[in-house]
Image 1 (cartoon, rainbow, N blue to C red):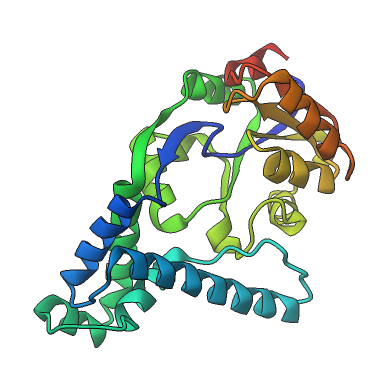
Image 2 (image 1 turned 90 degrees about the vertical axis):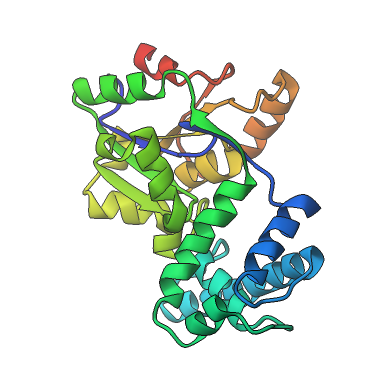
Length: 267
């Protein structure tokens, strides 16, 4: 076994998922959902307000982290907060027994998380493990490796998705960006994991499917990385992205061009 610690990305690396958060049909369903609680949006106005609130919250979060002397270029908000704000700040409303109750109730937080689940499930086109995911993780553990997750993700729905797929029990530590208020490739995100679990960066490897986020954060922290080409980039594109990735930081980069995670067992 080449490394002692394996740090995995989740979506696009272990979990094969496709979502559509851009189509008018999706936002029409979300607008219909909000109407059930007295908030009147069109598909267009809901999408516009959603994006506006995210930008505002990201700006606030950057300012908050700056006070802690963290220069954060990649903030990660909690989406459930946005869903609650969309209900409270709807430009047009009608009387709704369910909605009127929520506006003055501590149950709003629970509703916001439930809405995050609805948002996620409605946007999903497919959702499954990549072939070899469970086999590879179990075999690495059998060989004595420690396994960690470092994912740009929302706790509000990511943990339930992981539970459905039987993943949480396979990790020695789980880091999701919404908990840390920052996401890959922000170096402090990975450094926090290394520090909390007392991991030696030289004995660790970051495994993911994104050059900027996964390879980028690894090199910024002087950690080796493995790139899984699950998006099936052609060779010319792989070379282009690899060249760009090597311009900053340190750390060996290994590419599995066919995207098979099982190759980790053959290193």
